[in-house]
Image 1: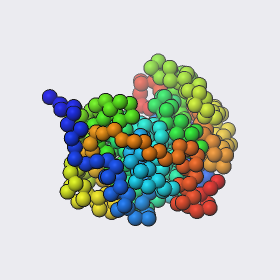
Image 2 (image 1 turned 180 degrees about the horizontal axis):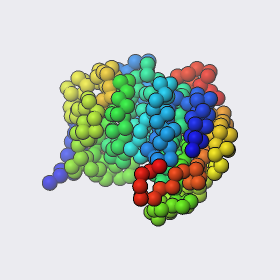
Image 3 (image 1 turned 135 degrees about the vertical axis):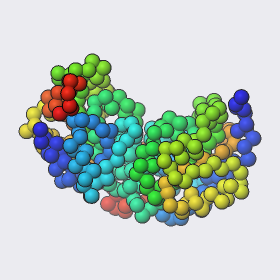
Image 4 (image 1 turned 30 degrees about the horizontal axis):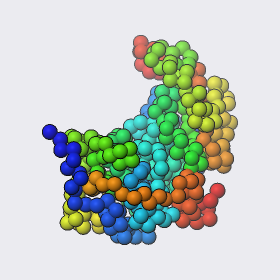
Length: 172
Length: 203
């Protein structure tokens, strides 16, 4: 379960300075690494939508940013994604999936099913990774698409990569 | 009972407020203006590459300014937007307060109306107090400005004081002619980056 280190390394390689996030168990170790990194500013959000606009502001100021969220947060972002498309701001977001694989909570399933179509409806390029061995290459490709290609992209981290949540014991 | 027409008689006029703020800002001032009336106000006061006017993305002005403020700690960042946009994203007061960027000021032009859609009353015409919400969210410097004397005292603070700060400026609810900035978002972004970052700003 060390694939998160590959995302972190790709972010460092791409000179990412701002990391906006809504806390999520699947991203917990990556978020903690970003918080501990004195060369990154890790910013907790009240809603994922804020992170889209914050990434635009970071780019306006000459910095690269990344948005970390869970699939349920995608639905909170959709209108704001139009900002990135209209102004051709880069967008790179890493999304941990729920409602996809051995999901315990049926309330996570509608947005889990809708995550990819909702993003694609807003013309965001979507890739999915379900093999830990591919995380490094897919992460680098996402960041390249955003900051060199000037596009909006999302990498969905398949629920197979996550600890299975049961509500029977501790999270991990 | 709420007095839903009280804003019709507020003494401060939004176009004059925008002009006074812009005239007081230095060359290091970078602005995000919110849809829609504050865009027209600051375009009337003097459109420039250092002002990024949002034609949409309602609720995004504050977090966008936060990203900019963190990226440019040596520049002064000012957000000017309306009460309706702030009401749509009240959590952003908390997000900004936690980061506490000292170079960020937020000016809310509060006419207690949805100006672009027919001047319907917002929650500030009824019960909501945006300065109090900001203060309760952890913004250390907040005030509500109701007349020219209070504005004259506040403008230097908006431009220079250690932030983050929220200044709720009660402005008259009045129909005004449109004065439109450019609306091509990619152009607005590129001109802002070119002015701020030079040739490196253009990818």
